[in-house]
Image (cartoon, rainbow, N blue to C red; front, side, top):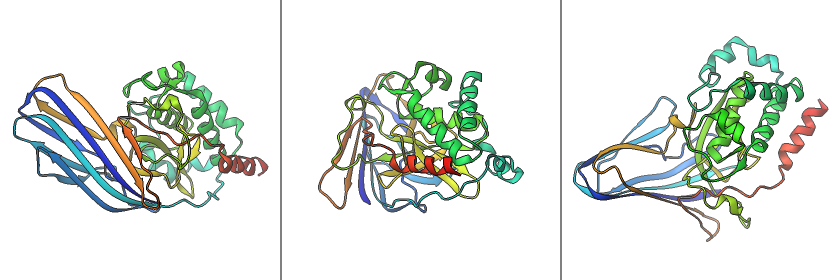
Length: 317
């Protein structure tokens, strides 16, 4: 699928801001599943935008505003071509996770991070789920995906980005970042490398968005990727209980949200400000647009036929 993405972030201040310095992570990556065709960043007031690639492989755009201003707008325009991934055919045993070379290569995604530091209760639950799934990595990951997806009720405003993942697990409510942090923590707690992913998500065409998700004040979606020995990284979306597909546009990955936060900055001026975010995603093969006014619109929760089939396949082996 081919998408045109327009991502606008606006800050309004009650008094003039003297200057600001900002770091933006909003550029879709190019990899085996998607190709970035065009990308542009512009700001109002105008600024010169520099970029570099960070440690995690993410393009980072950096810009500063040196003139007094009461409003700052950051506009990202991108065109991306995505494709469906083929079926996962690998079926490595759990013992493969203990291979020294594999563990060393993925060490950063095996350790707890600020948003994924699991406690005993979360680890025990993860161990039970993974053990009951059998002796293969894919089955364990699917069991943890199902556990993360069903352990939380989607409730906009019930959490904040810095909330401890164990508290999220205890409260059993959250938004897409919480689903992703929870599943990453569950995977790592049983020795499965996992990383947090940020991106854009186009809702399924013709589908209805769940009312409870309409008020989520998030501008990008979040999901996870688990490392499967012999197969590479496997993307799963616990919020929507599905594999990553052509409607998912990846921006970045890291240990948790802190490594991929979309926009951060500092400024000299009043503490109070208003933030408005708008995302438009337009598919090239149709006129319909998905419009998010500071909201995350998740894909429709369809029965996960493909995952269910994989589960049946794993159980039969």
